[in-house]
Length: 371
Image 1: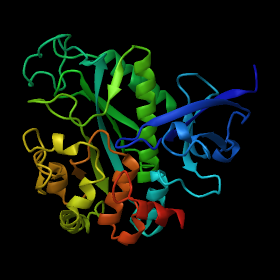
Image 2 (image 1 turned 180 degrees about the vertical axis):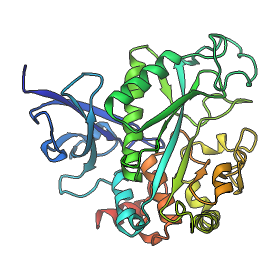
Image 3 (image 1 turned 90 degrees about the horizontal axis):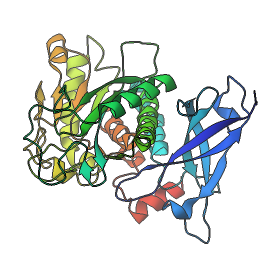
């Protein structure tokens, strides 16, 4: 058997207003039990990913985490990377570096955890999977967590995706059919095992790995995946990425309720700062008509899926745990969602949060370049 294996290097591009994963593969000789340091840096053409100009196009991929590659099989790897400039600075689009900066600025002391509920819509050509070629399916109601070929479309893709996520070692929690036909959700986050790393950086990596695997699996069915916040206009649910968040204090039985109340108060004061980072076209989803408040309203409540922040009923009853931010859209960047939540809830200096919008302002880009 050859000692050489394949490593798929994955990164986030600089597309606006919504960023996507890119990847390319190379042969590596890293042994059977590698560390992240065994994967070499690599360059790519940033002019083709909205991350450089053609006259100076090289960008650098720095490996930061890796998992087993369930597509190519045993001994191969998927490698998450950060994009750097040739002079060894985080690229202006490097949102993972932003999350690291927030953690280093003090948020890490609160041991923030996150779990993401990633919704997506499957399309066959320009039509959501299972929809008639013209007209619409029956009204929403029977599709959420439905069973049967008349209610559910694309289960084989969702199940195939679950299989490869588990084989890859992701902290994959579960899946379900969503409210709109052709729409699904997978979750990444705490599964009850305290040995699993549920910190915001690792879980955000796992969401991006999960998205890459979803796109890759859907290729095999000739189906495309959309994370658009409102894939079909009209009386149909949008697609979100509800984010479950906790800190050491919110999880503490003695401090939990007070810490959750303080977090809600802080989030209310920073509502707009969160909205601008929670996904392009979010106003089409947050109308107040299909779960969650309208985009200009902030409200929190126990077991309230119409609120911006939902306190799960068991958490409300026992007085500690986590809360759910229902505002992030399906196309949001989990690194930025986590960075924004950590900044607000953990009381990090706002100056550290250089990503105040995406695309970022020129003044913000200059500030990061000088770091």
